[in-house]
Length: 179
Image (cartoon, rainbow, N blue to C red; front, side):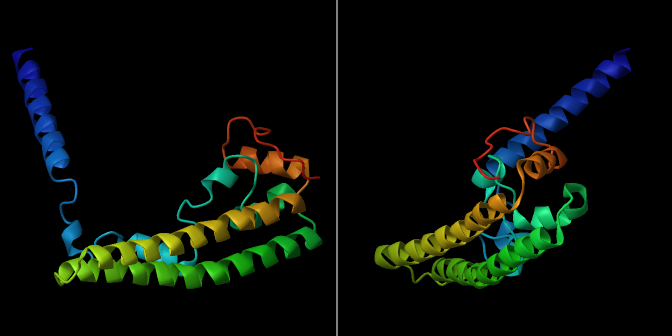
């Protein structure tokens, strides 16, 4: 019994120590990144045109994303025409997202470089952050627009099946007035 209490106490102290370290060193190891504000996975996702969570407002309110619709096509019972329409939305979105993703990565790299080289001032900071924010907003709009374009291609039943397959609680929640 005494050994059990000692082991529990030791584990609690160790956990508290790790938690304190995580709180005081939340960016430990990130100083080795190519771009401080972006992980390698972030850069890869942005350059590939992936969503990066930009379209949650649409996704979680009943507006399916084209990539996931294509992945779930057999389960949704998409017709050939629907599949072709969704593929066209996806292809256009991805092409634009890749361009903007590369621009966003470059903007973050420029901001990082300004700090790394010690040449940044208030005016440059304002310009660089505004540029990155503008590109990020455009990129988000591209992903959201793809959801907006995809939704009316599906029937209400297909949207319900999509929401169920994606694990969203109330499959009819946020249902828009599509067909």
